[in-house]
Length: 617
Image 1 (spheres, rainbow, N blue to C red):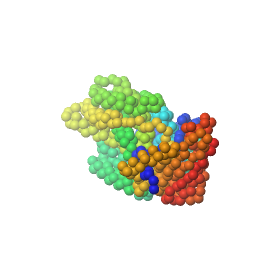
Image 2 (cartoon, helix red, strand yellow; image 1 turned 120 degrees about the vertical axis):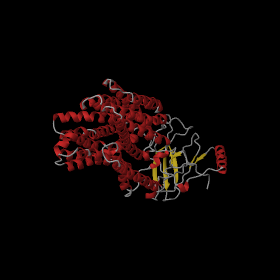
Image 3 (cartoon, rainbow, N blue to C red; image 1 turned 45 degrees about the vertical axis):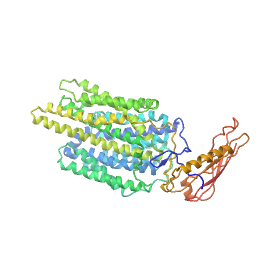
Image 4 (cartoon, rainbow, N blue to C red; image 1 turned 180 degrees about the vertical axis):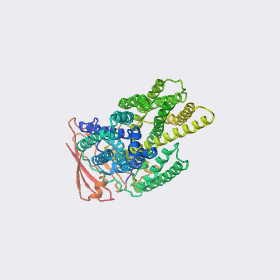
């Protein structure tokens, strides 16, 4: 049978073949840049819409005569829908072409925006927000996956920096824009402003995005995973959003308990499906240590950012007596600075890697939390604004490297699942951070008031404890930052490697190693070399390949090659096929020699593939 096959280095069951096909180009062409620009603008619009509703709630309450807790469902239902849909996007992006997914997302968002604009009653407005959220949930994973697919590794930091611009500037501008539109007229103007831009992006995206083919090897839709997703992430986000509010204590605890139980069931289901290579949300992303470290730090950063976004307005309005518009204008520079720095930080990442950027930034954030914990009633408002700007700039130096390094270590087949995982963690961590800040703030404020402190001073004391708690949690992020590693700079491929079948996974023994060494010495003596290459070996096919290349001597232009045919092709045909592929120039060939290989392959499903290739100039 010959020597045993030795697999290349792998992670999570994915062999990293040295013969990866179709390397990415060194630079983006004009079409790819247009695609990314359209996706960035579309993502900016949907995230902008997400943050404009809070300011409009009082007007909506007055128009529809609903109480505050009912009106708050416009925001809560949006977040719940996002939390349920985002885990599904991993399968969605793998199964359908990019243009189809984009069209679906923007069509849902545009339809929901139009329905909200014309809604005559509150229930219809609530349903429209759910439809909007269904489209919004798809956009960020779609944007990340597209960037990872199109952009070569040494340019990804610069392009991923634009994502930081989107997720930073849109939430910062949203409340200010909403306040301006409310000053000019009805709350319906908010949806009227967004709708034309969304429709324009839908048309441009349909024209600009290529009609790429879907992945025929994508797993079928698992009808059990969908309700488990809703059971896990819906109650979890809902329970976290109720923590620290006036709701009875049992209500958020019950929701969180149901969510945790659903999450455990969802994870167990995915592990079962992974055994058949049909996972709905592939958890093998966590077998890459760098991805896990980056995702952990991203979760802590999201908790800190969302918690501080909630805490600072409460502090500035109730302790320092500022108006909501003044608070919004104070926090606007930090959000804009964070967004504008994203592309710059991305370029720095391409040059120096993640650790040089992330470690100092995490230490600065820890210092800012310490400064917030020392605020007094006499602290000037501009000092609070400067501290917020410094914290926002530090987050800019965190998120761009974390996004890039997390997805950069994954094989292309897992890009969509990694993007969905990042989006899910953002939602859960944001809700958890808000819950942590508000709960600690409310508890310590109540303790201070019971000790006889006036309400403003008691709230300041509560905020001190909240920021101290955030600093304690952030210490874990500082430690985690030292474990970040830069992904390999070798070009990734458009075709993802398949999982190595367990039944064919080879093992190395001393006898096999001795046999291999002896064989190599014999081949050198004959002037030939033999290598065994695992190529595109998935669970759908038990293909074995070997490659014997004749020595390249002057005047010789032939090579004999045995190779594996792609398993997908093997499963669809058993007739001989002809495949053309560029081949490397022999080291001793003339300067103008550039041979070309044509392979004649015959293969049946589950059998070894043999291909004879003839190289000719």
